[in-house]
Image 1 (tube, rainbow, N blue to C red):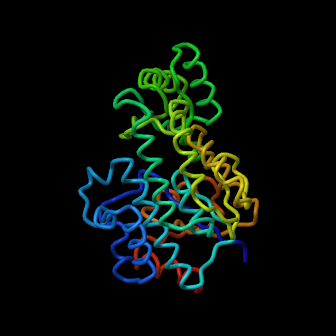
Image 2 (cartoon, rainbow, N blue to C red):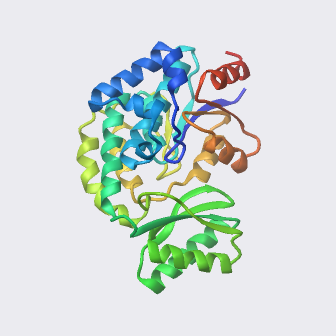
Image 3 (cartoon, rainbow, N blue to C red):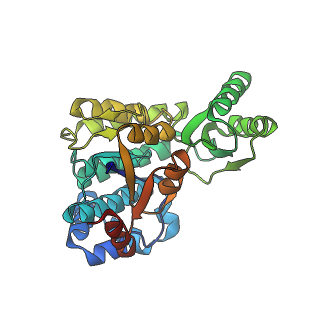
Length: 313
């Protein structure tokens, strides 16, 4: 039997009510929510369970909320003896992966991503940045066209997420992203969908975030991950505690190389993956990247039971 990976979702997977079933059903999940609530000095758990949705969608709230639900789900799995061989996370999800790998605690990570989300929100004035999902065009072609538009307009636009072979998300200055969208459609993209985001993540416009985030991350007493973390920046496993902060700082402005992350998991011998946290976005992406992967998810009791049965636990 091949290796097992845990994969952790990023921003966009949030929904009101997430994590409540795990919180109410499992003391180890409840302990994670309680620790984060105490660390942040607020009832983030109530925001996850009851909303309102508008507040949950604010980046500074979304990031610690998704991380907390993911860490709670990972704690429930660990209590049942389900331990991954490798872990990976999409953008924000890399922090959840580090928690699951024992590199830091959920409370410390929640404080860090609350700061990360706040800094990202503040880096670009509302309306000046944008992101769009490009469907049906090869990633290399998307990169070429973005580079040409950036040179032509003098505005920032570049790939932000290489999600799967037929889906690349671009980010940058609103005008440059719009112009790139026109050019991408002309080049054969099936669709270019503007995304309802509060900031243009993973592009050069996020550069101010790096200097603000680094001291926050340096304040965490990182430990070597118990399971290698396949990072967004390198799409290679990292087990070195000293490299965690530099990689997370670089991640702010670097694209998420999710296609390569999944391919690397498979190259490392992974045949089974569990998406740990809210939603099934990564489950779908993983299957489109490598059809041989068996993928399940854990976000509530029903999905937990289904996954435990499938894993034979």
